[in-house]
Length: 408
View 1 (spheres, rainbow, N blue to C red):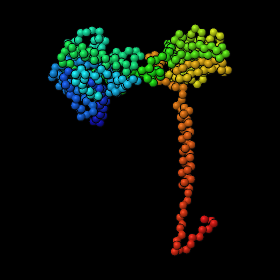
View 2 (cartoon, helix red, strand yellow):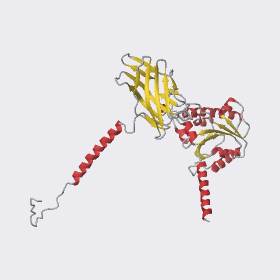
View 3 (spheres, rainbow, N blue to C red):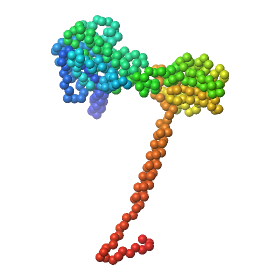
């Protein structure tokens, strides 16, 4: 009997986990030619069945339903602004000027599944195929997939481009049909998305973390097992000759080691008059990789070797904003701004950065030092105050005079 009880508990637990994992809430932005319900629901989140009942009410007017589906979307996307203070959806926010009735629901469970359960004929198209063809399907429900993100396109720009396409398509359909209901939603939330979606939307290069709106002017080099990045043009300067060799896009990164070797990499970043040799060793036991040596050669046979303690965990990249190396006599200097390097990268993208500036930097040590001194002073002062002894004897005018001896 106990065995059946344990099996029942296990089945209930698994079903509960599946129900929780499948419940994903995304925003829904609705507008149409007929008046939409703008009542605020009693619950903060709307279930799939409740949203389906809402759509069934709209179907009484027999509208043509068009659904624009993003791969990921969250309420925060509607509130973000760029550096100029502009929002990502200016056209959607201006739909009321087209005499369209608008309703917004921030958290709806699986709205796309609810639409497909309306017992209506459904046609699914991509945004690219619909824009290339002017023919609109005659089915009752049209679902448009907006998964057309371009390479290196910031998410804000992608949403702004979709905003323009959505309103343009809506206007075209409005000219052909009298009653239209449009829905803008997503399959997943962009804040709690699956791992593969989060990875495809991430920006691993450090130069894009400050602001996605800035144009990346860096230089990226890659070979079979190595990635190298510079935020700006590098330079190699020899003081005596006052010559300065610029490291730019004309350089090529090539590996000179065994391509099947998973522990050691020897690569060369070469240009017309300068070559930089890298030697990297991966320690699978400790889980770290090390930049063991680095040398510079020019036409005049000048060499620069100055590598020590440059390492990072496996699957991490090493980054340093001001990476400068000099010879012992300070005659030659190699400058690589925004230097970032990683061996054996996954999917040809940088992993998380292991920065050359440690966690306990000079400002942090200064703050800790001042705080410790302040604590010592306060502790010393409190100790001195606690050692102060107050009078515990007082003269009585009607009694005997207090006599204090020398020992007291």
